[in-house]
Image 1 (cartoon, one colour):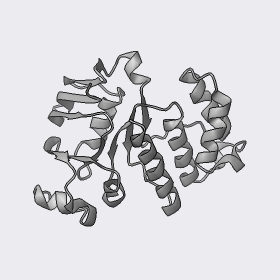
Image 2 (tube, one colour):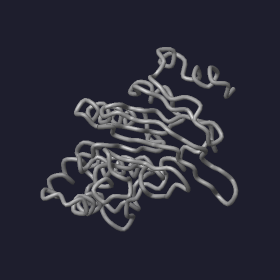
Image 3 (cartoon, rainbow, N blue to C red):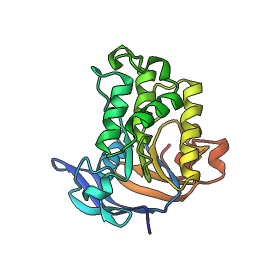
Length: 232
């Protein structure tokens, strides 16, 4: 079964078509880097894929179900520009809350385990409003992973992370992929993404201009895809 099917998706802001007839598929276990310049439509597309915005036309299916289906939405983890954690709760309270929302019976153990993994266990009882941007991002990463999602949708996941935290996130993603999870991430940090990506999708001014396996050239030359498909 296809993990993610995007079929003829259009999105308008007023009369402006932000996305124009986008179609591609993602198979289970693939890691897709969603690429494009600022304003290309990447965040708009990710919001539709996550069920946070509706397409004007077309459909999105997650493991065969409509993206708006309640069962579909519990199968993926999301990390976007708005990192969706609560400033007035502690790090532990945030993760326990989200674990409970996903119906996990071992919410306390899961929260502690993920705080350990993202290296925040020493500040587990501190309020999030006291955290640096990087610490908040690491907590949001833990939130996205806590329910062992089958599909991870990440928008600029390496933002505000230092080199050590980038390596940690790459390790978590790699581990999830080996376990059968599917990943689609939008990023401008192409070099880091290419160490994980099996496939690439390139959007230009709302149009899909490339979708396919990651080219070997992209490991050594992250800008290769832009030059090859005429974006530079």
